[in-house]
Structure formats: structure tokens, C-alpha cells
Length: 184
Image 1 (cartoon, rainbow, N blue to C red):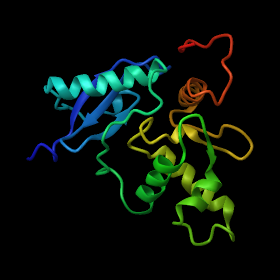
Image 2 (tube, one colour):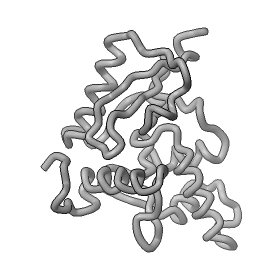
Image 3 (cartoon, helix red, strand yellow):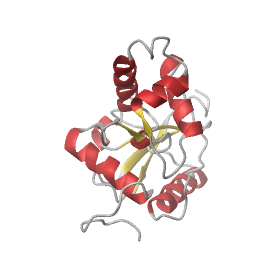
């Protein structure tokens, strides 16, 4: 198996309510971000390349500390494809740090839904499902996709919504609350 083909794993400290992230990396780039260790494959192959581990760890640490507005890591899109990948790439390219977009607007912007005008609710719900299946969370900022009438959802129920709030507060879209534990 080539270096680009194998997914190796790195555990990255995180201030998120879910705790450390587990990042899947390849010779091409980051292929997966998992919020919970239970979602990592059984018997994972851990990354032993110090340079790769340091680069990924440093970029996430800098982002969480408010030093970086972008993680600026190469992406490996292997765990997505078709319309899902088009929507995720559109999000990644067009919704910068500190901004949000509604599920429906992302559906329109992506161009993959022929009937957005006829069924905007269905297109928005489909985008919501796509965000829930985003293998590159945080890097491809699904937390920046919100409902037309509020935050919308985020995977893992209440804990996931707390992660979304934390990330949107970090990026300045939400005002910090009294219990905010991020950088000032």
C-alpha cells in the first residue's frame, strides 16, 4: 500500500467539549477528523512520521488558540465523492472564517440540486445530512452552515451542538458567554 493510500491516525489535543480529536492523515493530506475515539477504525495504524504529526498538531493548536484563521493543511478527499464532495468543496472554498451560510443557500451555491427552487426545504435537509457526514469536519467547516432560523444541528446531539457553538464563538460569529473557555 502506498503512502498516499494508507490512512494513519494522530491524536490532537483540543479544547472542544468532545476532547481530543483523532485525525486521519495520508501522504496526500488530512482524510478524516473524528471527534470521538470510538469512531476511529479498530486497530488503527498510528502515524509515526514526526514531521507530519508536528504539522497537524501545530496547525490545530494554532487554530484553537486563535492564532490561525485557517488550518491550511492539504486535504485528501477520498472519503467523499460525487455531489457530497461538490457541496463540501463549495463550503470549503466560499465560506471563510467568521462567516456562515444557511443550508439552503449552500444548496443553491453548490449547483448540485436541480430542484432547489421547487423544493428548497428538501435541498436544505439534504445539505444538512451531508454536513453530518462530513469526514473533514473543522477543516471543511460544516460548523459554519446554519439553519435559516438559528444554529441548526451538528452531529452527536447536544455535545455536537456545543462543539458548533464553541467553534462559532472562536471565529467571532457568536458572542462569548460567561462560560466561554476559549482564547480571548
